[in-house]
Image (cartoon, rainbow, N blue to C red):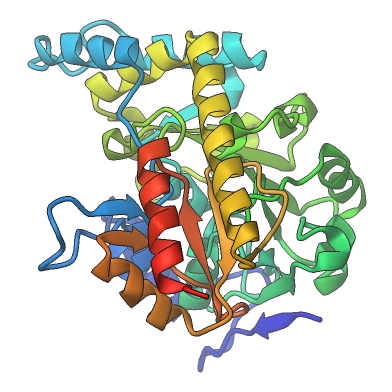
Length: 389
């Protein structure tokens, strides 16, 4: 079963082209740098609510509970002293070289962005048309839905099910629209944290329309030991992989993201000032990102620490008889409160905890970010308070 949103333009749309109205919207979406945050609210992290307690615990945006890795923070701070220069140490080029070396991909297959949301948004108009739509799982990171709706692009959302362990099923995505322009997979998925196997990605690449693109969003890949879709990149001209330093690396506010693709795909994403979007990343952020990639032991330690805390929270919820989507491999869990989310969210706020949002398909569930061990102990106490026997 799928949910479909079809274009409703009043103008006649030529095959594989945008109407004048859609073209104007497309220019407005991408032409002014970060103007998409006004159009796509979930692309913008919300500020703390007025009146929020000073000691509020934020379990709502999937941020890591502490800042950048110490060596990365030191590297970023050093670059501030050279901030009078645009790229004093050739950091842009050095980061791309480091990424290519660490991830074992060709240098010309990597681009750096100010976060991963910009290339994610660009992918929809780059690879979809008013007739070649977008297909995703449901629930998933909804920015691509909002862009498709804004531009009048066909959208199919395929519900995640217990039968598939709430993981993305490539066959159901293809069946939802066998002629789509873009198939979006978030791996691990946001908000469920469930993995998408490499076999599913490979099957979709082998069976989709030859000119369609598969986008694998790996924002949470560092929280899991699952293999990356980068191993499938090779010479493919139909695979786009996105990464970010906003999650495990603790650099959400520094805004660094990566995209991996054949140069032909990247070129299609360059319209509307794409060159500027990829070329002017803050040098301190570049330095921090480069240093982070060279710290595999610290990355492992962060992953293991988060996993242990997540497991303890799941055990506490289970003891309380509170259901959640099992199998998360990311720094989040989707919790079924068995009652309206707004009521539960307010109760947590009264206890000084901000939990994440809900998705329409599961109105009694909300996403909870995994914080530090101390923060999640406080979360557990609030669970006990709200759900007294």
